[in-house]
Length: 191
Image (tube, one colour):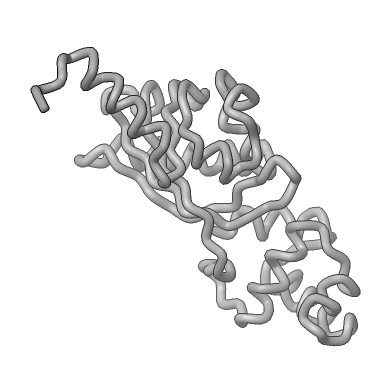
């Protein structure tokens, strides 16, 4: 085979990005400029539904979008390698909230969000918060965020809904939440 022309090489690179099994997205000022098939599948959208949209569409809340954005921007402004990674809650098109690992690299270090490449992967294990939660509290926290009732969570784990209520109460105490909405919000921004 002869060496590919610059145009052929560009086409190969575009095709490799599109079919890569790693969910990837290219953003400009937190707006989706390009995404691959794996990224669309991870979030349950068609490519056309995400192009041109703010990443906000994939976050459980506007507050989460802002907090994570501020944190990552602050890190990138001081990072020597232009890379940032964390674990966070993201939201599937169906409304399901899931735990994900995100890794981003800025192509414009002087203005980090201007052009970035991100890789996301779903983490199917329980949340690893910075506060001390038991494994069961972590499991229950994920289901609370997804809107399940204590009875539904109890059925899922084959335990009494009263036991789930005890765990939920401990979560509220540990996270200093006054009501269910505040509890969900605090679980979402644990990391």
